Amino acid sequence: MTKTVDLISPIDGSVYLTREVLTRDAAFEAAANARRAQERWANRPLEDRIALVLKANEIVGQSTDRMATELAHQMGRPIRYGGEFGGFSERLTYMAEVAPECLAPTVVEDSDTFRRLIKHKPWGTVLVVAPWNYPYMTAINTIAPALIAGNAVILKHAQQTLQVGERLAEAFHEAGVPKEVFQNVVLDHDTTSALIGERAVDFVNFTGSVGGGQAMERAAAGTFTPVSTELGGKDPGYVRADADLDAAVETLMDGAMFNAGQCCCGIERIYVNEALFDAFVEKSVAWVNAQSLGNPLDPETTLGPMANIRFAREVRAQIDEAIADGATAHIAKMEADDGGTYLTPQILTNVTHDMRVMRDESFGPVVGIMPVDDDQTAIRLMNDSRFGLTASVWTEDAEAAESIGDLLQTGTVFMNRCDYLDPALCWTGCKDTGRGAGLSKLAYGALTRPKSYHLKKVTS
Image (cartoon, rainbow, N blue to C red; front, side, top):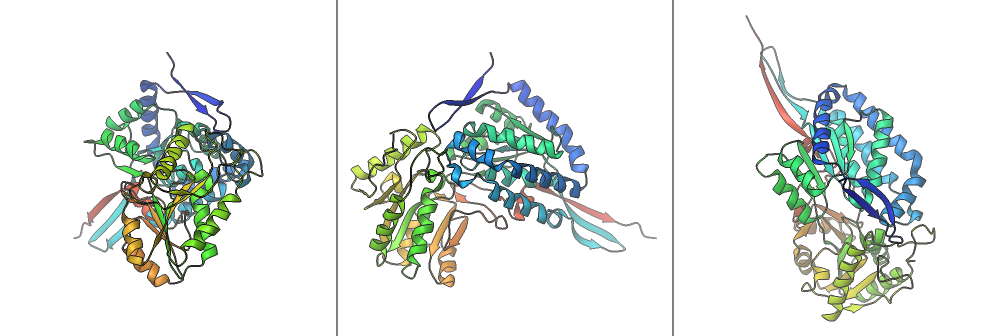
């Protein structure tokens, strides 16, 4: 019997599309095809691989209106934001630009006696397990450099954004990347684990939940297959006494609420110097109250539904628990809040780290705000988390921000901004956020293996 999965649209709970799941045999055949095709792909000149990836970028950019509408149907982001092509293209283009430098051999010696060098060889087949919240941008973080480096790629996209995987495959195939070199597949968890556990793939990149990352590592246990993960987050913002208050409110609230709070590096907790606390909360409440919750297909909507009703239930539970434990909610229920995927964004004060909303990942439009009296208190609270993806410091003192950043247990430190991936900087995390090196020149180090050559020349 054929197994299928349904993509349920958060707009109205309808089935947006249904797809067949690959059988175990078909999945292993796809992996075998990738492995056979990869060697030919790796032997193509680097400039050819770069050109084909750039061509795919151009093709994706020709359908941005379609992208925005399809994303609204699949995961609820309002069409007014125009999809993800800007960030997608920025990341792909940067990785293409730095590839010749990053993939060039490292020559240690080239003399009359010895030639010693290190080459950067592709792993083989890279399995990309991509998330739904930024389905184009998160996937391309690995797809582009993996292909450029000479790997074959098997993409398993999230059930909530199955169509994105199909669109990416269409674009890369139209650009000229062989179908066996870039494959989009629909897999269940057991088959995914089997591919990893039986070494049908050579490298795994996973973005998702902590539990999902643990499952990937368990599947790879004993195989020595590298597993790169970007998992949960509880990213903090800290507003010092010398911060630009209006800029901090505007950016941190956007970082907390954009995409219905469903951002890997979204702001989930904020610590504000007590001298600015009341004004910060007042301005933040006004900012959130100005948002329009509604159907993402409406151009006036600024805040769409959460991607799935189970995600909304978790956020509501965290909010209700916090209020029951003494937190103060500042946003009245909005008209469009249906008790389902459409969820009123919320600001909470009188919160503590005993509450789940300040401890567990929310991944929704809620943020807790606490007053602090000095940098040391803020640092202690920001580090009081099992996650470590990004942290945002708001100040006019760049030296102080860097010093604070040195003490923070996080992968990225921002000053006066948040919720942004700079493709020239390594995207990484620590603690339960996982381990890996995405984007930047370091991505090529992760997606290739070093191979050393020690060549002694024959001399008379």
